[in-house]
Image (cartoon, rainbow, N blue to C red):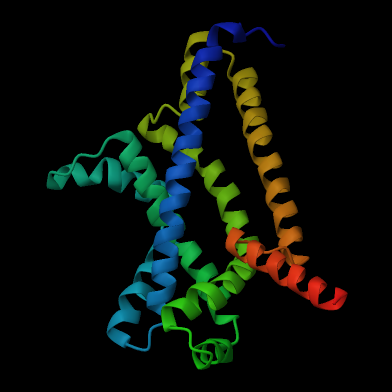
Length: 239
């Protein structure tokens, strides 16, 4: 069954793998920033601020990612905007997954008790400090399961960028297939590579989620403060 000379295509597969990871990293980083911004806007009391973010989220949650890819890469050229494959591919992922992450972040922020912000401000913390040190760490814990799922899904969705010849894994698979005419073997191997990427990632994220649910601080600063607090308690008990 395996008749493809894979040693001849090792370089192409490695290049496709690196490009896939590049798209995933750029897309996820941008989607997290956009999603958090949209979540904060949607929680605003001002309708003029809240409405555009809500419309964006509802629109792009209900448009296929493939359609967004075609618009950013092919459609924008009709109005004089030409994006390269990396720019168009990463932007498409940001636009699409930013809408989903905004829902996850909004639900996580809403899940933190409102009284905690008031309590932090009563202790002398500024609104920004209270959000950064009290609200956001708790919201990150609540958002982690959904965010982890979105990251794995985004990594798999980079395969749709084959439609714009983005040089990722699926594009390389097409090129190898056109050379060897061994479509079944090639796509089985590519599927195995995606599994080898996504399964360990999902398990690592699940392990991180369990650690955080067990009480391990997510941010390094909070871990340092927790260690100092424990050391102080131990010193007080010893005295």
